[in-house]
Length: 188
Image (cartoon, rainbow, N blue to C red; front, side):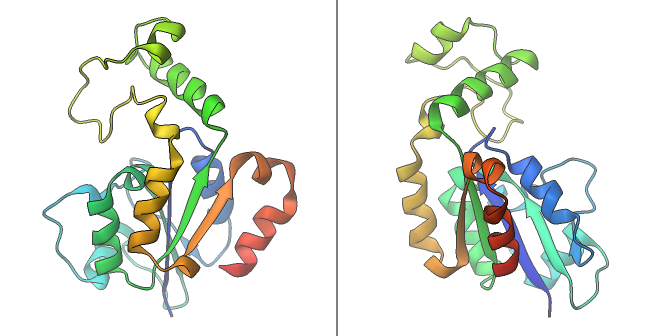
C-alpha cells in the first residue's frame, strides 16, 4: 500500500534536514523534480486524483512505497492544505517548527545572503512594512515575525486534518534527542 507523507512548516525550521534523513530509507520515494519543493498544491487550479498527483510528482514507484514531499509553504496556505486533504485523505503531515526568534533571524540571513533582503537586521525585524518581492516566490520572504506566530497556522492545520495525521516536530528537540527522529519514523 502506498503512503503519502508531506513535510510542512516554517521556513528555516530544519525541513530540508528532516526530509534528507527520512528519504534515506529504502522504501521512501522523493519527487522527481529538479527543484527541492514541488509546491504542487499551492496552485488553486489543481484538481486531480491521488494517482494523478503521485504520477506527476513521483513518477514510478512500487506499491509498498512511502511517497515523501516537502513543501513548507503549504503551512501558510489553508487552501493548499484543503487541496491536500481532498486529494490525499490518508496523507500524514509532518509539521516542523523551531524557536521563533532563532527562526526569524535565520530567515533574515537566508533572504539577505540570497540578495532578496537589503535592509539591516534590526530594520528588517522591526519594520511594519514589507518590501515588494518577486511574485514567483510562493510566500513573502519578509514575514520574519509573522511566520513564527505558530498558533494561527496550527489552527488551520488542525481544522483540516485529523489530529492523528499531524506529527509535530520541534527542530531543537530533533537535533538534541535521537529518540525524536526514531519515534517519528517508527510511527510513520
